[in-house]
Length: 147
Image (cartoon, rainbow, N blue to C red):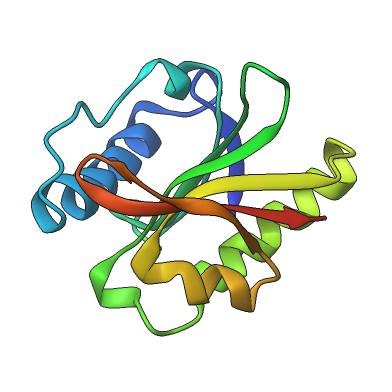
């Protein structure tokens, strides 16, 4: 399995459709988040994803971007319901870590992790920082990983 790393300008319409469908299924349908799913960050982020063989669905996706202080951030992490529990999320984030280390010479990656998946991120070496906070009415915690 090879994850793709592309900006929105490099992606095909089909790739963007598949990614957005997975994000909508995960964040809007499953988690009932009512905030806009697409945002300005999508225009500058590097989208990471794996499509199925037919290129009709995304199996996993996330985005990485530099925030206003030039720190690398991870967000919109989603794995298709049918693929969960098979290690695909871990494989994707390991690919992200390697990409950031080698291609971007990054030394740190942060994310606003939903609190219920905090242990998943900890298993990949992320450390919690600060108190929990609400984002889209869901408890989150800031987590960072030294790359």
